[in-house]
Image (cartoon, rainbow, N blue to C red; front, top):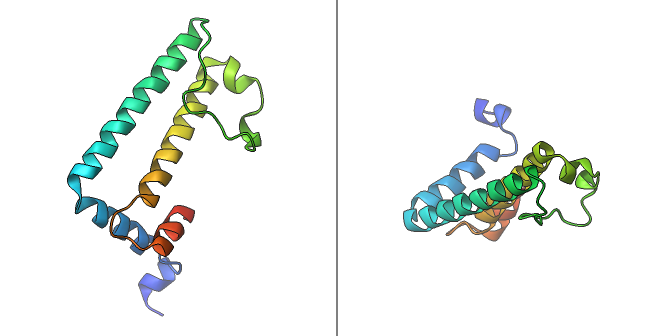
Length: 116
């Protein structure tokens, strides 16, 4: 077994490199995705600002109903916890979507990369 296999027996780094390399071969699509993410981040910040001054605002990135992690009222009543929740959900969904939408990557590799 090589040193590489000892350090990364599941090939996680190779998958990450394949995803990054595929996106680098499509810079315009990558730029569009980054712009979209930044726009979504701005919307999350707007929503948190509205809530922090007492105005009602629906979640910009709602948690999936089966996700029990964010059922406690503190995740919506506290502006700080709400921001953490929204930012976490936005980032994880953006990363997962980017992995699943990776151009030129086999579906099997997309699923493996998203799992890791």
